[in-house]
Image (tube, rainbow, N blue to C red; front, top):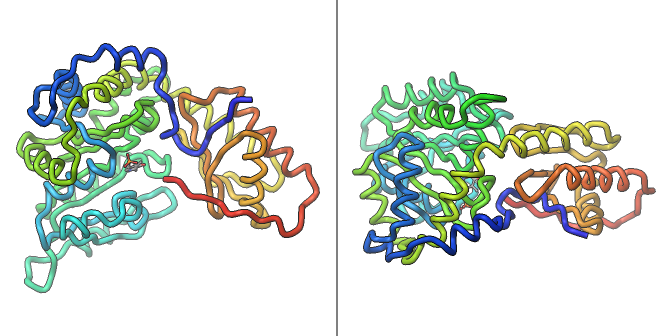
Length: 357
Ligand SMILES: *Cc1c(COP(=O)(O)O)cnc(C)c1O
């Protein structure tokens, strides 16, 4: 039986049509700047995000790192959420490789920092302090789309103090599709989000379903600086058009269908909410977090794995929907969870959960 893999939207396999687009892609050497498929993708994503230029990157981590290094110099700092991907899940790259000090701020359960905390964290020009240079937000965060008013107030305050703004938009297309709603225009919603930021990173290898890749979008000057850093961190790829063609295919064909993933996440959340022993914590866009009673999360994960259903979690569980999962798969996952709680509790059988971000 086919595995229902809900660990992450990074597990998607390229569709047959995407593979065809990859095989048909004209290629060149992108370090010389002459891979037509990379150049086409960069023009496409720059236009979609309303920026002058874009740069194809190996990963979201590389996009964010090069963005921070292009915005900030040695001894500068970036202000960021305590649980933001750039701060917590990217190996401390900005500090390690960029000599950029992070200034993390607390986030609430929806991922939002407080405006007053941001104001207090921005440091005056004084040799005691690192130079506050950049505000970094994330959208979606753990599946949560950021409200317009939050994005407005945070970026306006940053700008007022002379800070640049960067959006970690690994899943910004999910945010755009959620903001557009049924019958709305996700690309207009995307622009409304990205227009607020000086730079934006997007991932093609998550819900959009490409095998590899990300892009950093911003002014031509910023992108030229980022290109130097990308080369230095080993991200200068040669016939990268093979991968860029997959990303272009994803932009052409996989944006609107993110709404299907969101609907499946709601189907899953609704089903989980009806199971005794499970509490759904959040179910936003394509990500569902659920708490498991009596610390049985690791046992439940192991049970699900035996049933061909994969999820992640340490204390609670995380399920992510994507183009490799359908309604039947979600229903199978639900049946497997129900089956677990129908069994008598086995003593001392705890296994270790894994976290995947
Ligand atoms: C996945 C992710 C990244 C990093 O992307 P990789 O391609 O895995 O390096 C950055 N930010 C957020 C919010 C993510 O979810």
